[in-house]
Image 1 (cartoon, rainbow, N blue to C red):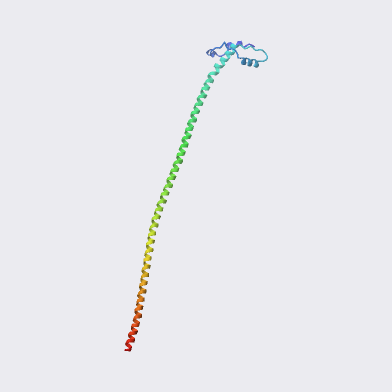
Image 2: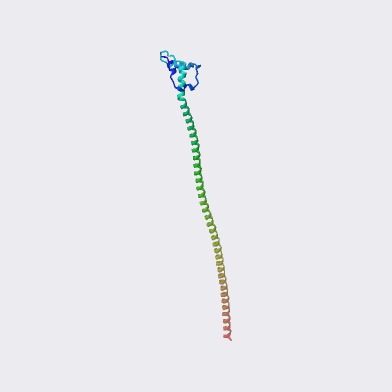
Length: 185
């Protein structure tokens, strides 16, 4: 069957594409045509193949190019969206880190206040301890002074008693002597 009749048929836009009447089929294409052809010998006109190719390309190529542009645009938009999403995720992480830092600073401030209060209490306890030690020392000194005075009074009383005894014993012996002397005379 001959395909020459198909030359006149085809899309009207094939005239827009350049004609290549000089092109010859490559050996691979001709081998492909021969291998796909049935056992009968089919003769294909080169002009018909060119016109069919031009018609097919003119029919599908603009849509394919538009689809390609749309896909490239979508890919570009997707890359932009992914970058924007990455930036937003980074911002959220930074915000969380700032919140963590804020809570750490708040906690540090609380513990600092506790330490300041403990320090004040330690200073107050030290002052009270110092006052108590001074008071205890004064009381001890006063007690020692009182004991010393008591001891001195006791010693003085003992001395007075000894003196009184000696005076009494001397007085008794004087009296006895006086009595003895008075009675004998």
